[in-house]
Length: 393
Image (tube, rainbow, N blue to C red; front, side, top):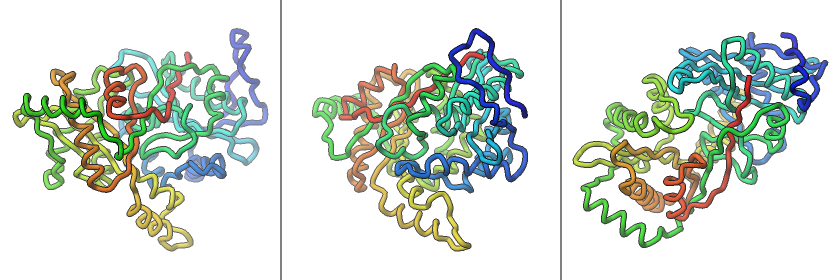
């Protein structure tokens, strides 16, 4: 595919288009492996990058194995200078997002690039043109592939590795996107919380009073009744976030697929369901930070035909001491009643009992004042900022 045409005079600040870089869609198995493996060249000397498992990335890009690809239209592109891959990007048209929000927004994602603004422009212009040709008028990103998966660009907090299911990128990516006409749409925050921190006595007292007054019971998920429990959580999830910025309800297949993946890493004691008079009205999900083990595997379970990576993964998984509180949702009608504090407190107590030292709460919207204040009241400290960018088409 030829490079997109030069921008008109209305965009004089864009970096010049490189004449020696070719952008082409991923078509062959070799292209797909080049797409999957390109990040290794970007992060070769970055001690905080956590290589994903190649087999997981193959499944993620496989329409037969990723339910998102059953209804969304996704095109993958590679940037090459000669035979050398210089970058990659995905253009994403999500009809569910367009219908739910009443917009003509598309997405770009899986963005990786050398530190070259010209190459970044070639990639972003290609994604923009692909979306424009399909009737869209703006694009958000990076999204891999939606707000229900990896979402946003890390702009603050590169000093430490990412938590499980959170993105990571070099510091220079933000400058590349801004140079190519992308601007901030929304920031997402991550919070650090130590299990050694004692929650304020006032918070504990009020939470316990609410628990007794409203007859709130909190229990761990029942793995013996997993399918039914997933259905209960699904109903809360889609109701709890329906008005949040960027939210898109998961399809039945997407939710079930995610639950199946998480079942392999979940600690049942840390997936909590709050009930009022037997009705599930809120839940929280906290996972062991499997990135600590994935980093040891180096992206591959086998080397030289031997399960070296698998052995490293299993050994490292026994030493995981960090967690990520990945989601906490409350049904409409039960918010502002202290359920969030009760779930935070119960999670903190259980984490201590299980020997975890602390972890991350992520992500929250920058303007979700109620949730952010609740986390701060529990001793949370902002540790990372992720930015969702937008570009007009």
